[in-house]
Length: 278
Length: 273
Image (cartoon, rainbow over all chains, first blue to last red; front, side, top):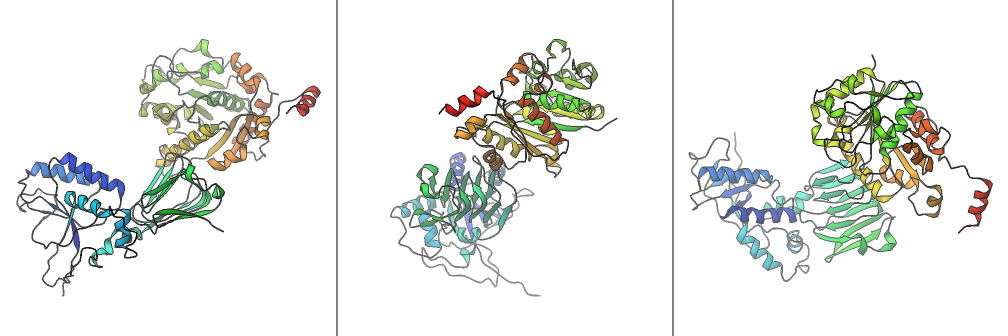
């Protein structure tokens, strides 16, 4: 029997007291890119904090509340951990930072066009680095393939298999009934297809594209996990708001000619492009 | 012993005609010979007793029954004209928190044994009273005015009907009927009002009836008689009677009954505008 070794890039979360502020920062990131922590290996780094086990328990519970599943804890001896907690982890080599997707760096990650990068994007990166994500290699199996981490921007393609862009191209869901006012369809991992109408006061939030075979009268937010290749399609455009990768437009700013027409909306050069479908 | 169909009359928005519709539907069903019970879920703001002209005979109410202070038979008020039509009034002195989920469940399941039809008049809003009224229903009548805010509220309610009801939780789908009330033919023609087609398109629920705006409705509620009993020939009463036939499964096309106009009315209308 042979055991394969594989290396992954894990996100390392280093909580800093006061935790309330730290969680606010996490919430802010989740709000901006709901798919960011989904399906990613996450290590909780509490080295040097001498955190009481009760506080650690609390911390894990709060992370779980935000659907952040921790796969290991660095900095606490395995014997101190309670049953049901993720196992203790140590070692690992530091890799380059994992960027929190912003419209600018998400496109850089996807590898097409650095000219869209905004001048202030670097600043945004810098600030998020301090607060949240350091990336690190884990799973140091004997025969592990070691991928190289050289540059700042061109991180290992393997590791980026789980980047927001590819997370978003994963599963898709189909809703076969009208989405009513007050209802919200949240699917940060992929496409959402609605067979029926999306009512005024309803919202669709998708990591990928949104397809509505009916009238779109509510809100549609596509590409929320940092994917600006996401698009919105509908057979009748009467939306209150449309957004792709955080860039949004409200009904008042729409082109009147497309009202009630079948339309698609895509992201191009930091603007939303509306086109009639025919 | 029968097993009733429980129908909730709901809308989200207030003042669209839920109570009028409940009274009209309940009495039209009773006229067809069924055993019918109308329940007022609007605890604290009860009106159904007034519309049905039973306010002077209310002794016990829904809250008493839910709390076990009175039996259902003590609380039911029989209609003056039809002896197979009953009302279970709401309490005016309590609020909606007085209703409990289990209490309502046991009341409804007991009423199911005595009646053929149980019509629940839902309060406005989407809070406790409204959700409890729809909770155990088998079918829903959604009342909307041809006007945008009412339509959006109905849409919200339909979403709740498909999520918070017993049927929905058991994986079923509640049959829904759309009743458009206070419809003004003249204003629909001039575009001041949403057309029925637009409402049906937005809500995607089959239409069960269109009730024209009518002075007869106000007149009927002031004398405490459901419109289907007070003036059978009024357009509104006809619309409700037809809606009930559709509810009973008859397949008749939905028409919009019009107010009869005299020769002068027609002539005058032609010259206006």
